[in-house]
Length: 117
Image 1 (tube, rainbow, N blue to C red):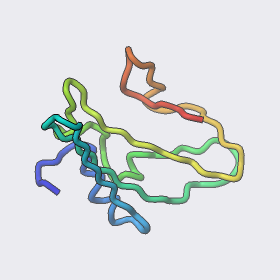
Image 2 (image 1 turned 90 degrees about the horizontal axis):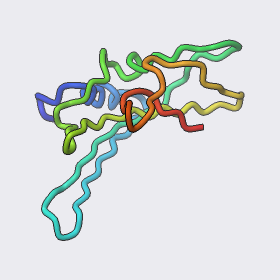
Image 3 (image 1 turned 45 degrees about the vertical axis):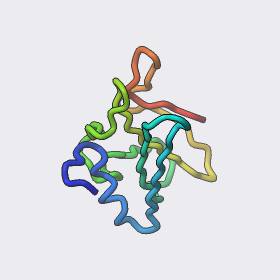
Image 4 (image 1 turned 60 degrees about the horizontal axis):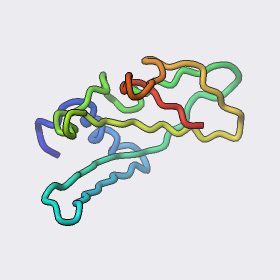
């Protein structure tokens, strides 16, 4: 990886050291055009605290970063695109309580959490 990657993308390096980590790379070119769109991602699974009551999931800690600010390399036209997907898989009922920052409300507020149930 390039030395000036910066931002949240630095999480890729630490995540690849996790057990059962995977690196996802794609490159797409629209037919007849010269522009390529590249994406890079990593993924791994881990266990979280179990038991009754609410549980805090510290995503920054799981990713090994201090911030989710995007890398300058994630600029696409006028937007920076950095996405974190968190999937909670459980045989118990799981419900959303709150998050920091709060839920995003596109198109007026693009930063925040999108909850897909």
